[in-house]
Image (cartoon, rainbow, N blue to C red; front, side):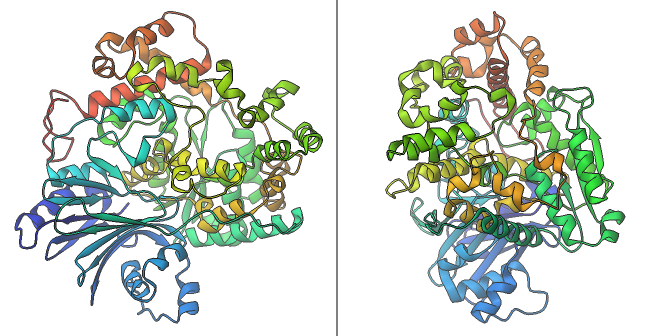
Length: 621
């Protein structure tokens, strides 16, 4: 829920307010609109009362979206005095006056902010370290448009709706468009961890300031017990920061990440609040399917003494939601994202306004065997092999060859031997030649931003974890999907202190020669049942993709695909894969290609001149 929007144009332009009002009207589900015009700037918010705020005082005009969980800590440290009931925007204006750009690296939470400097006539746009709250920028003619949604931006600029032809290829090959570009030509996504200074006057003037970078690895040899205790404290703080006193739901699967969020929350609140449903878990279950995690979910509910809401998702298919998602969202997503749709519907029905997830655990707390390659290259070959052989992998990954494969990226074998490239081979096949020249493995935008720093391979793996979160616009998709159901979604495991902990911790400790998420398992002892803590098998969610293969039979011939017609995808290669019996991995890739194609046809339809519910004129691509 909530949104922030702004137009930076020419002072005295009477169209500024009108254009901003069109942007606000584009997404009524985001809450009550409010806006101000100050010289060349029109700025506004949409809010349900707590998730966004607008404040004007002295030199600063601030629009804020999201939440901050450490205001009290910072206020004591810096001596700030906030009025009773002060909004986040009001607090930002006080804090920014004191600290300037240094403030952003100290904030803990999920947020996006716009700060107008009246004196210097500049607009600052910033997002949290990870980029959990969306913010898109569009320079069109004589103005700069900034908003939470792409289609809000287009509603204001009334720019022709055009496809960026390179974005679909980026998406299919890499799972993320490069340099923050989107499917919509001329519209970019502001990176997380960056403050962008936009100047009034000639369009195009901007300057970026990075307020976060990977911390160095801590050389101190802390024991596993000490690290697990530290992680438990960080989890306590992160969940407390993200959980409103009014109550919250938790998206609970049978895995360790979401279980850690719920187990931590359950340890912090009273049994009465748990029984009353003030804090309640919501779970997708798939009776009779390989991806059903009901036994693990029930073990968590029994352990925490809670009655959760189990959403029977087995009867639903991604194809049932395909047209809806492609009509209303700003990017294509994977066919099984309907799971979040069902959870949001259930949480909204139960009156929850905030939903917590376990997203981020795989990125920061999973651990990596990259440290084995580092040992190997530093001459500790015997130690590397011994550590590798002690690691417990899921049964599907048993075998000496499977473990030796973990060394191959560091040895360069994936570049030399095409058969080790896995699914990337199919992706390369179905993308047309003009878009196919991509090295493997791919370094993402965070890698590029810190390219000059001496980071270990393990730390670079964490940076690529940041890229993967933005890869399919996961965070933005979740935020927009939840907002349409009147829910604010939060991810406690994205807390910047947890991210810093991951970078500073020796990756060997994360695995500890036993299994992935070793420290998280130890930190959650006593908060989760043994069945979940001991679990190392991965859930077979690929079965959800296999059910969608019939989409290929019901869609128009591949030769008529818009992406084939534009030379982005290779129709002959797709036909060759469809004409034979293809495996699970190929099924996923082909279904993803179809999802992108349907999205392009819906969002850039050649026979429509308006977006659904909006006022944006489009034209043929």
